[in-house]
Length: 162
Image (cartoon, one colour):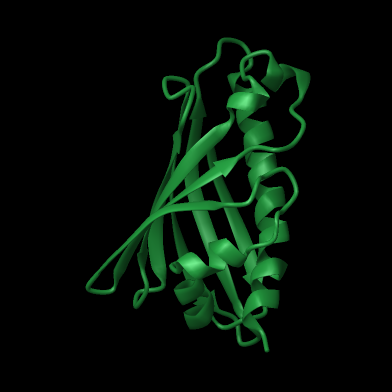
């Protein structure tokens, strides 16, 4: 299922982009609804390109359709993101710790100035392999992702704004 999300920040694009490529941001991020504190596993920088590996654990409620194919206690994944800081863009994959044969998510992002801050545009493709309920589970995951990003933006602004 293709998805797109626009995440609005009150902070300028260069600062948000640089922060999103830093370890410090994730270590100081408050716990947000439905997800545990992000765990930075690795950060590699090479000539303006930053690769981050961050583990997330689901900490919310799942619909009965999602619980039919997923055990909530096994919902953790590593987000592997590549940030082209100077280009204000990047890509990501979500690699599940469990259910690797049933879940795939990849995408791209870019930051655009708005005059009053910036917008991070995220586009991706999420696929769940589960007979009869795949579409329902995909919609639930995307809905949770949108909700997470909606809560994440003001938390990042609060850390970056003076």
